[in-house]
Image (tube, rainbow, N blue to C red):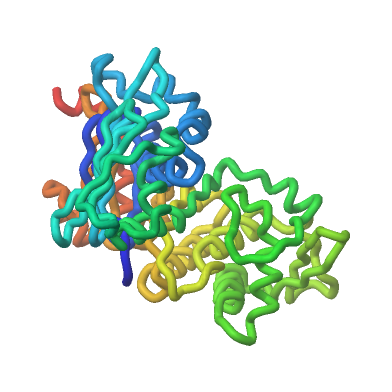
Length: 397
């Protein structure tokens, strides 16, 4: 597999007071409500948002950072998000002014291969020091044209910087985040999708039918559409395929073929589970397998039968093992959790101070003997791991 996220360090971001995780190709997060699972995923997406849209827009989507600083932090503390891929370590520090995130962030980008510091910028500065630009100097202090955006974007824009920075920028731009509980299926059912080229499923999944039709038209030259349809057939034995039609000048609509029906079923008439599974599979397989992409899925189990969840887990394993995808899933489903190995599962809990503690299930000593006889999901249901019925402070008494 090419470049991937392999470490994530977060400080003072909501309940993530100080979390350091060595990430894998496949990462399943579970735990009580409010334990920081979705927040953990959002830290990755926040950096991506800053890289693509700029700090102002990224923070405005999060109420400008109001209330985002960990409750136990002091007024002078900052938020730190540090990500590492195979060749770089990138540290972004967010300062606060009047309780809101400042537009000009601090940044340090290090090439791990030769230990060169490529970017150095302090919080509040509209300048950054760029190293090894290949322009006759080892370092240059640059007045940033758009200081409210990441200096990484400017560094890559020069086109003469360290290629590892370009890989990091590409890595961030290939991240995808799907808040599956928050999706509105009404528009897909009622109006269809706007017809457009491309295979990227948008964050709100509103272009689902357009993406699938484009993949359908390419099935003679690649396996993406067939892969999605085969998993749908395994999930729902009566499912027989999709039929697309142009319902307006710029609108695509889908109909479902069912072995028990003589006529196609309009998307407005199928179950939420069918649509949810189709969205999950399209998120995993719509983009070409020869390039890396990072996929964040928040509660993909919505509306799915246990059998369909087992098939979905099978699809996730294929995507991570054969299709160059790195996947993070936040879930409450014991059925889904039980489909994966303990080494790939992270339990999130809040301690007595209200900060998130994350541990790999394979590294929790007190349950290792139980894992020989019970699935992780069963232990979760029995409140042997990450319980919700009692607080961390009660556990410590």
